[in-house]
Image (cartoon, rainbow, N blue to C red; front, side, top):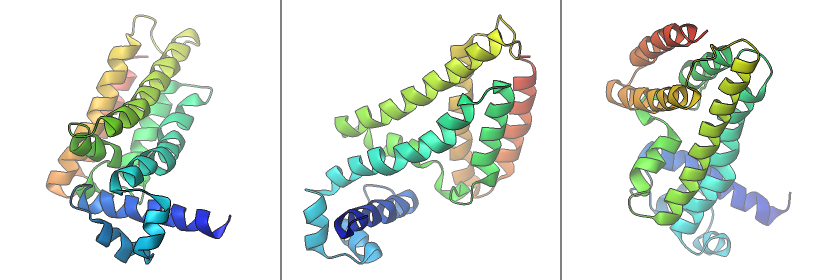
Length: 196
């Protein structure tokens, strides 16, 4: 990787971590410069402004991370209900980066920026639609392979799973712990078992 590419990636990764903790609007370019140890000139060499960097974070950091954590686990053969539960368990309990007090990076960005920035809204919507379509496809395949009851409405299940995940992330932000995560996972297991 060339030095300029490495610098750009460092800015994006460190800014993403900072924004996850502080929020997008309250994170200044000066905060990002202090965290990344790059000059203002280097920042503006890579990005015209903060919003261009924010969109790059969505497309170059958040999207690959979501693909790895939310999409790929559902593309395996086998019982999608088990994959959904295992994915949620990993995201809530097993992922060391995602802290209860900071919530979900994608949810945070959606709530904070999409009302004010149409480009952010489109970029975040692409991520959410991809996750939604992957969940629906996994459930439909699970129905064909006998893992999921044929009368199950895949889109309804998908909305329940997605909204439950984002909702419990917000509860974790309030109680700064994983108690609500454990309760959610216990009930999610009951719910998913009822779909067999």
